[in-house]
Length: 437
Image 1 (tube, helix red, strand yellow):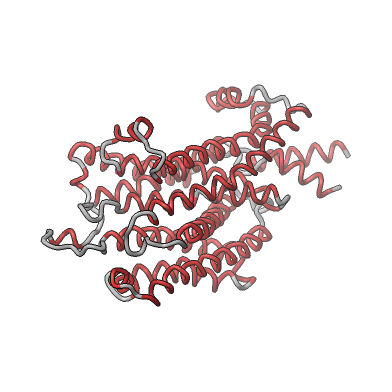
Image 2: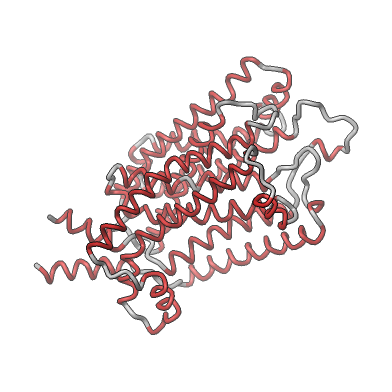
């Protein structure tokens, strides 16, 4: 019996250990690095010549950068959904997904912070938030909750990793001496003692309880940045719930995409199986329907009253300049995924992957539509301004920085998967034994 248990443990460990990049991995990593470097060059141009290299002007002072910021903040909510809510609810089937969710959350929140610095134009101004920040400002609230959320997410990623670090340290490799030094630095104090496990489990539970209200705060406060600014399209009491429901959806969609990719690349079919896709598919459908409800609420009420300032904004969204993007975001980001995932065949890995990609792409364009059309329709009409002020389309520098930041977030996830187990080894072994018993 002991020999069988040891063999099972060894097989699980072997399956879930980090793997070296193959040819496809090297091409993928190289492509992401090139995209990130192009974004860095575009940012250098912005630093050298100023924000004039962008297409942002007096009216559209928030453009693609803030759209990207809201997208990153939204997708980061997945950490609290998969890790905290599922752990507290004792949902064991989510174990293979918890670390995937947390690394997405951490990488997204890092680049959300960086994109804000990019949007400021002069990065040294970021210090002013701490030196001269006023507690009455929603921007200061956002800085506080983002910093808190980042620290908690990082701890929720690190603490469950400690037992796996012990396994990694025990498997010395001559080819990875640098990695061994890092593993020892991060986890040499972990001996796997019962008292350590007890303290670690209690700490993780406390963090799970803490991160849920913090996660709700980060998305509510982000929505308040818009809702407390007196503009058509933003003057809404629905914005907090609207942002949170959208964040849950895009976060879950991001996890579905990551599940499929890691399952395929690392051959993890035994650990991320069709049951996981089926259950995640049901969750995604529920979240998509919830977000659709808040979308109807967001547009139906102002459309029914049709106040004059709202009229131009809504007309542009539903039938004007932004209509193609708007209907693309609604159909691709919600309606089509719902239609796919309502059926059992649609909750298989490949259809789920397609639906996840659609949700993520639709969510990005939805954030772009939250920011740009509203800024182009201020309460005071635009008079005696250059024609370019009436329209906004990002410059190549803006596109390069935005896409480069997305590549940077994917690079963080890629390198993490190369260095650490993307599925918790220790937790998987324990669950296998509990299932066997």
